[in-house]
Image (cartoon, rainbow, N blue to C red; front, side, top):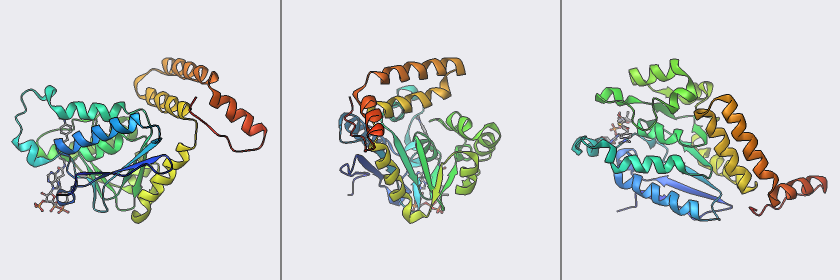
Length: 257
Ligand code: DAK
């Protein structure tokens, strides 16, 4: 049986993780989430990995949590549900994540895509939070991240009606940063990952952390965090290298220090 998560060796700093349960449109069961968590643990510890691309296939990024598994699960004790820890693991990942979304990104699939720092959509992408159709509601950020990204009007519309939006609407709403031809989505995501992989790693990590804080903090607290991070970078060898390289009209050679 093929593995439900394909983990490529990193190339030029970018590792591609491919959700691989095509028979069920990459529905996210516990085993797949577990494998994704483990792959992220490994990637976090691997200095060769500077950015991650998460993708699915042409028909689906992921059509949500595995409904068959959900139907079999007793909801009592949901806070001890191992899937909660897996979602938290994905949210804690410190390196940049780029989601390359073709086809359906629904429910937990849309929520997984929203855990990415950069979201690239194929023209055929469809985003939605259809949990309401199942008598439930989003449970991994679909009421929170979606609202912060697209605003209350559209988030409320999507979460209460279960209606999907297409790639163009997702771009207009600010959910994705770019649309590509479906067959080029992964290639484009890798290219973006490789661009980031050439930057100074500490600056990349602190930039991601700082932008993320904008969701959680007041403007004054966020600005304080940004200044603190900026000051930390002042002591890095990579900052010196970046400034020297500019003045010497050459490409910088960052070493992560
Ligand atoms: N789970 C299991 N199987 C799924 C599936 C899913 N989410 N989505 C599709 N499949 C299966 C279908 O049952 C079908 O299987 P067979 O009948 O061939 O055996 C196969 O994939 C192909 O699907 P369709 O035949 O339905 O394909 P169509 O093109 O006609 O329709 C569709 C595509 C995406 C519109 C449709 O499949 C669909 O509506 N799928 C369900 C989408 C959905 O409701 N997703 C939300 C699930 S609830 C949590 C955090 C988060 C969550 C839960 C817990 N905790 C922190 C604990 C998240 C919850 C959800 O995502």
